[in-house]
Amino acid sequence: MYKGYSISVVIPCYNEEEGVAAVIDRMPDFVDEILVIDNNSSDRTGEVARSKGAKVIFEKRQGYGRAYKTGLRNATGDIIVTMDGDATYPTYAISYLVEVLLIDNLDFISAARIPIHWLHDWNMVQRFFGNIFLTIVVGLLFFIRLRDSQSGMWVFRRQILSKVSVMSDGMPFSEEFKIKAYRHPGIQAREVPIQFKYVERLGASKLNLWDDGVRNLLFLFRLRFPKAGSAGPNLDSVD
Image (cartoon, rainbow, N blue to C red):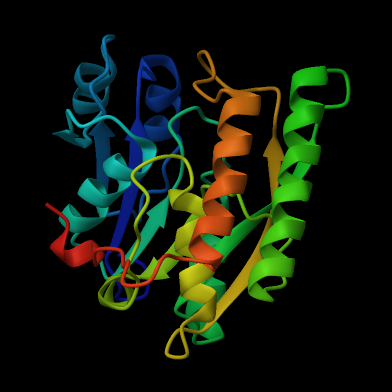
């Protein structure tokens, strides 16, 4: 509990047995519930997470967004925190992100990553500038001021799930969730910066840099210019 609010942390995982162990070990004591969504892993992700005290939910349908939808539907906390299972997001940031959410009476916070220790790694440099490009596109298409449209760390009140409908079952889930939260008139949203270590992930990256980047870009245009009659399911009603 944090100041009377129960806290759930949702972590989608695909073959993250090394990273998820570190994430859970670093979790603040006030977190009430850790949900690890084992997205059809072939390693010991679920077993390791369960041994660390997390609640493990197996989701056989592959996809980053699909795992998130399952996790968010099962989260019981008043406030939900999301992060990846690769140990790149700082768990110590949860306390001040929740504090900002409560003090400023916000509904949704997206953590804007401030990168450190990445300049010597060309792959991570490409990720950084790819994120900048996608964030610029988000701003141009949806008139939203963001610094980090691809961040996977958010803190929000569980009640907003009934207000946000998300179509994507894949990597675009992250950008779509933010866009719809920011554009909803009944949701108070903001970005708050965090330090982020691009290089120091644990385990192999599952991101296909160019394929996933192009897929995210195309999704933004489909989201901005949908076909007549198309609509995404509400998170609460996802099968």
